[in-house]
Structure formats: C-alpha cells, structure tokens
Image 1: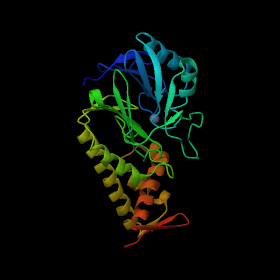
Image 2: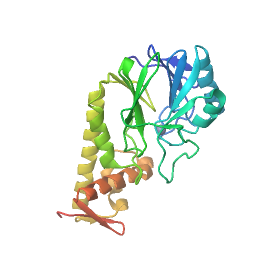
Image 3: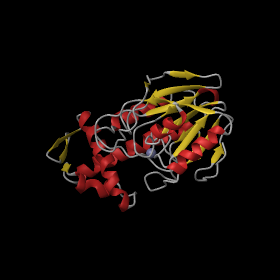
Image 4: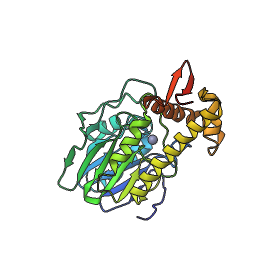
Length: 283
Ligand SMILES: [Zn+2]
C-alpha cells in the first residue's frame, strides 16, 4: 500500500472500504496525531473517534455523510487520544458503541462505556463488510484490534504504531500480555496494518517480529544493566543505560516501560523487588 497524505481533518481514502481522518493532535506520544478510520459506504463503522475535538468530529461526520450514515463506533482502548469522541459522535449519529470496559485507574477516559461488550474473536457482519474484534491486552488491558476480513486489513490502535514503539504503563499495561498479544496476531490472515498513529504498514509479520525482538533486546539490556549495577538497582539507576538509544526527553515515559519489563521478569522469577529495588535472582 502506498503512503497517504497526512492532512488534518480531511478524509483520505486508503482502500476500497476505508477512509482515514487524521486528528490534529500530533505529539511525541501520538506521532502525526490520532487516526480515525471509517469503514463502509452506506452503513459505516468508525474506529477510534479521537479526542472529541469538534473540528475532528465534524470532519468524521462530513466524511461519512458524503456516502452514508454512521451506525457503529468501535474503540480500541480508553486512552484520551482515542475514545473521548465516542459519546459526542453517538449523540450526533445515534450509532451503537462497541468495545471493552476500562479498568479503574489513571490515564483512562471513563466517558466511554460500550453499549455492547465485544468478545475475543467476535465478528460484526454487515451487508458491506465483516469486522472481527481481537482482544490484545498489553498497551491497555481492554485493548482491541479490529480485522477487516474483506481486505485483510488490521486496525491496530496503540498495539502497534508506525514510526515508534508503544509505551507500556503498569499495572494496566502489561509487558508479558503485550508480547503474547503480538504472538497471537500472527495466527490471523493480515496483509496490512492500519495503526492508531502513523501510516499504513505492509509486511505485518516482519513488523510484529521486529516488535517482539525489540522488546526482548530491551529486556536483555535490563538484565545486563542490573548485572553491571552489582545485581540490584532502582529504576532510576538503570533507566539511562537501558534506554541509551532513546533521547533523554523520552526517559520519563520510558521509565514506565522499564517497570513493565521488570514486572515481567519478576513474574518469571528472574528478578525480585523490594521497596523500589529490583534484584536479579541469579546474581
Ligand atoms: Zn494513542
């Protein structure tokens, strides 16, 4: 698939069934901004309506009404750049909300409550397309990817982004689950990835394998840094050496993913933690 222009709040046709509307909320966490996807011509499903910004909502409604009507709103997860637009968009269109409930905790948008909870592998069949929900916990415990079977196109939300890796914030982000969810995606027939941030990605298997190996390399750096620190250290002590390839302004965010790596190692009994210090079991 070709690269498509990154125009804010303008519909861009990316495949026979899919239009993308990019929100104007770009940042170092969101890349060019949040991608909202519209699927179908007459009866339309929207994936991730975005922040709730009015200009963006108007652009979504205008793009849909050029050919049909929004009937369904799907949300990949309850982070503030993906789901807050769901309820206002429902108020304007009467569409039904689909997704999973968020866990209680920080950094969640609680305005979004699905009308219908999706099950893992559940399919929505319409006269124009079939969309399958795939539960992919890791970035968030209620994260879903959506597979458009008619085009073998997988909407990945924040499970996979183009141009960067994904932050895993414990406890609702979970590194062990994240890696399992990546592995699980390999069993589906997918030709292209449509991420929540960035461009369409080809060769999904290569992308998924790179994501997995990148995390395992990072995990090896965590273990090596603990060894160099004498077998035990705090997150603050090993943050810079573990993320020496990442600009320092990102280290505050990277500390969350580092904690997620350490929790995974602790669950595998390779590390034990005690009052903020993480100790290698085999040291
Ligand atoms: Zn996001």
